[in-house]
Length: 636
Image 1 (cartoon, rainbow, N blue to C red):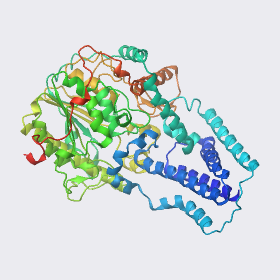
Image 2 (image 1 turned 180 degrees about the vertical axis):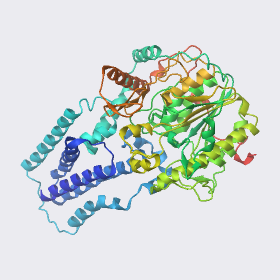
Image 3 (image 1 turned 30 degrees about the vertical axis):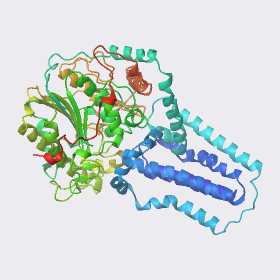
Image 4 (image 1 turned 180 degrees about the horizontal axis):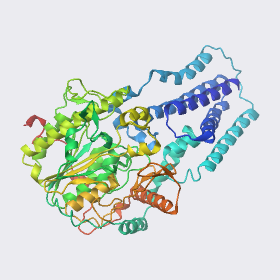
């Protein structure tokens, strides 16, 4: 029992130290601090207590193994949090195809002191193997085992009760995962996530047409009529989406060492044919890039755990590519990585993309590949012959990669000096953002040279944050002020540009998010979206809904920003009191997220029919490269 007590204490303290040093859980006040300190105890007693059922030395080995497994879970979440500012969920564990491409990122995330989190396991193992401890070959007394079990139940129950006092409905509402870990602990969160994931898996089997009727009624009641001034202004034009990896809006018009970081994109903010949205938010969760794509193609929110790209890749969708194909467009994606990443080769077929030009089509030589795939400049240059081969009008998407954590760039390719915060990751971010900006400028020139520019609408959007919340101390030096919860939410803005010759440009201050992209695009093309299930509204509509949900349940509106159950004036950032109006906004935000989740988890679009829209047949799409197709070897 002495060895058991020691193992419990070490795991308890180790977990608390990890909470304090590795996670930004938003602890406020002594009560929450006590809960944070207390919550590992119940889990440690419960799980390590199972080892007491074994005899003698086996019991000691079991304790070390259980301690090791719980430490691995803790450490895996530490690494994941350093990159995503989030916690692992069971659905993310299915994304194993992505693991092989993130070696550089893992190296950048490792800290030398990490080995200290495993030091206790080594010491305990040495004590047993060197026979410094000689247990008797008997089981622990039944009374002692029962006492440990009782203590574990008391600790866990007290933890839950105290958490409910401070945060009512903790487990029944869509709170941020930070909340669950802060109040209940890392190990209990894992159990909670397993229960939530199993419930979501059952939703499809239980769904029926009544469920989709509820969603239809809500969507129709919140439909925003197109703005006649913009409806059809890009009718018949080609469409190109430029997926701007990790680009946050603070980088636009930002000067470093007296130079503009993104001079070309800055010029578009003043271009008479470009709409620039400066209050546009990413709404991604654990899927990040995949979530951003899911939002823009479907006008549905990404999932609260994992990503629909991997967990719901076989669902029925009414995505923009399928809609565009049935309107006479050819559809394609260009990406300098391999097609299995994020399960794209499966879900793109469900979306209706006819072609997928992945790494197989590009010259993936060592010099031009970095981090997650092909660098942006050769990527755009090599894509032009393939783009020109498509039948017009086309609907296409280009996914950039260079501006991705940990932002590696050579001295030869860097055309601006790094920042001076002292955080190498933050400092390099500005160099890779500049590189991406130069690649986009080159692409615009290539479009003109290819004769495509005058009949093409180019939509450029930031997919998610690039600098994680864990680096806010460095970011405070970048933006010149303390990063409060309100300022951190402001940093979730990403740029959105819609450029088309003849389009009346300007800066748009409306609040919006990625879920609004599909209806906005389709209305510009002269296609009404009234019959489709969508949770976004046209950004140019006079009826556009400016209450913009973030995936964790927070929200932004022109007047109020809601963060972790607190409310801020959206203009001043000052705390304000909750009102009935704010309660109504928060309820509507929750309704949108819940109904979108219901649609995806239940695969409800299989029940939804639209006149003139045919259900996608994924078997008709083949993404294997044919010998007669253009590739990078024919780059002009």
